[in-house]
Length: 139
Image (tube, rainbow, N blue to C red; front, side, top):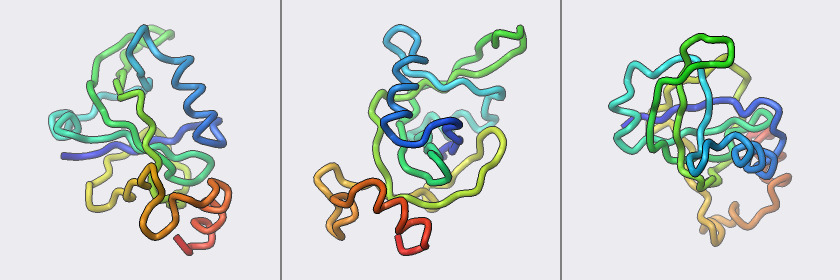
């Protein structure tokens, strides 16, 4: 299994990301557009997730359910990353901007924040507090 990490450019919160994902869906499919097809697609499709960097922090993931070739508006080849509609919050982690997407090994991926609040209390914190603590290196 292998994950992918990608910036959510222009999003400043998980709410903004959810709204954008809803606008970009194709019918009942939730998709993220990208330029290149992962060469390690089989590993990604074996249970990988798309982790999203929102405003400088890795904040969430969405399980990847498919990878499909597509045609971009300019006529060039592109790829659709088909994801679950579920946006799963993860332990915030600062990350500098980068172009495109990157592979993310499972052992390097941030842990999920339990929906009921993680045992350490991080899940119960307001998102802004988690962001500030992550930026200070305290999470």
